[in-house]
Length: 427
Image (tube, rainbow, N blue to C red; front, top):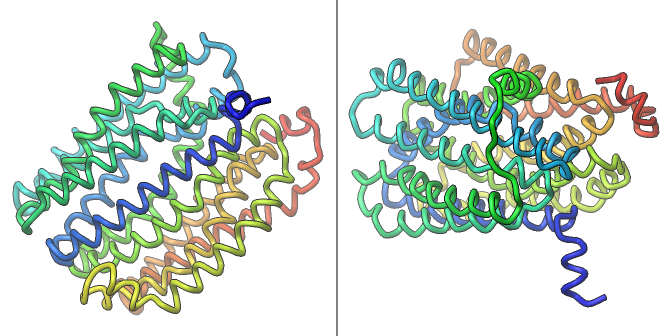
């Protein structure tokens, strides 16, 4: 068998899906870090804080618009990948639901958030971030993930990020240009939508069809448990920036945003394994892959975290300039998040979903949110909410989610060898 035939045979398989997701995440990570360093030098830490606060706020809209479809719709596409009628209905129902949530998001932004912003430039920043979220949400990545054909969506997404990066370097030349940062991402997303849907309709053979509102409701109902989990997770990851912006000012928010970019880059390097394992595990339940991922990949991650912790100051100064030295402490306090992140990804939906325990993966995130909110309340009443205390609380929250998932998996480990009938009873 020749190379071409081997590639065709394995096309859409776990290996290609993982490689494509890594290309996607690595490009986002690398280009994001490059532009962040440039923005820090041009805009300064205060405007970085303004951009960070806007992005953290609109991330909640992203969770609302996606509504957990990245998990529920991906799993359904994986199960019915040979049935085009089912795929057509899933595509149509999901996009219709997302369109409704987009309209609601703009209503919330302009009625409740925009009046509280100090000037029109910040209103534009929030609006452009929301537009970029909406246009990205229209990309049917759940379809390509479920079909394990990530090459097309990856090429388009990398092109978007490269376009946005080049535009930032070309046009963001002084502080007053800061509103352009989210604008260029939104413009790139629009171009990607055209190409991706052309490929989906013409090459994959999946297209929109007539559906009933009841069918849309069914998709929403199936996704609701994942939505609750995503909302809980978004509180953990995004409320820090909003609290700091309100209570400590944009400078503290800017410092946190820069440290969080590093942790986000680490997450980007880890999540492709879990993202590609999820549809594969839902279909094949090969738990040996989970063990291999933990034994082969996790030690490398731990070494990387140790290197960043030790050499944080020279790395941050090289990346952000002299002001980068102020980011050393918050970054070191957030390193445990990166340490706990990979086992949380792999032991979450890929493992617990295949065991029929997806609801406990969702509950674990809700549990982490309770830990986080309780911690915020304790901080408010004692030492106060500041950059250091919120970073420590974030690491504690991530660790509590991992502990919850480990306890559930150990207590139900018999399900790893159980048949589909037993698994079905757990759902």
